[in-house]
Length: 197
Image 1 (cartoon, rainbow, N blue to C red):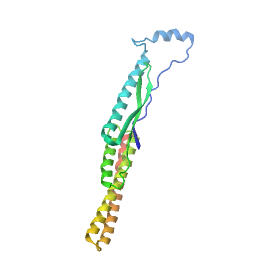
Image 2: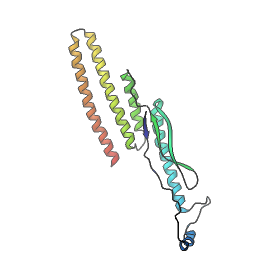
Image 3: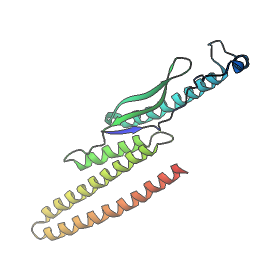
């Protein structure tokens, strides 16, 4: 299982520090509380926590909904806000990114879903991009395996004289996979650079 997670992000919850007695009365006058008993600073923290909670839940739900049968349950890292409520500040979705043993065609289909799931959020995290890159690599290996199987089948149909041609076809398939891997690596590097900027 590979974890696809959102960016871990913490918003510090302001806790009162020890203050000198002469500052206490001045500070008390500055700290107006709302109907819930929160100061302005605490209200600001709650607003930030609510916004982060919405972002995290949307990010993880995007992974979950696109990952389909390969996505596990969503789990969240939460903090308790000054209002006593729990807010999601990080999360992850477990996704099965393993190859389908003995079935390169199904592996290719599965890795396409895993890649889409990893990159589904509006702003994929670096870990999301890494999962997509790993799935792309698995997909390329499956494509090379599939080409080799097809070349061997074609050689068998042609008979004895086709063995040499089958070997050449397998070598060509490997060469094609290597070129595709290089191109994919360049594409993923471009994505990572775009995210970093």
